[in-house]
Length: 123
Image (cartoon, rainbow, N blue to C red; front, side):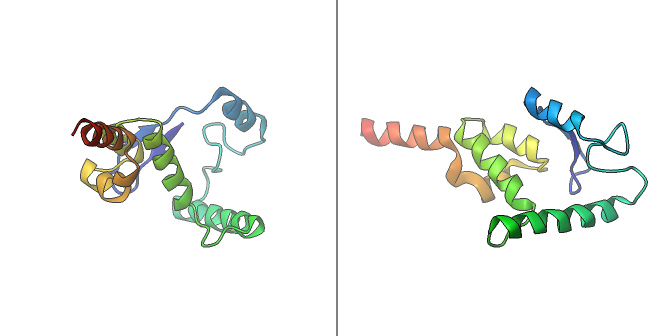
């Protein structure tokens, strides 16, 4: 899946599991190149529509303070918990610098914590 990062202007490619890709392809969509956009509205207009739709889903699910950025945060934390480097997660998030990623996600960098644990045990 190709994503456009608004802040950096970079395109980021994120693989999705095949079962997810199959489910997405099975859903009727209005434009052959896009799963979540008709291609005819403005990007801000499409974002607004999806923001409202996701807001309804979060509300129905009982998620407090539900917004789309929480999905991005979950993705980042799960990737870091799985051992991806901060540099790779930063690239996937489209951050211009790893400093931004470190600022928001450093508590979840598994490799850093593992290294700290080994150092403490060795001491």
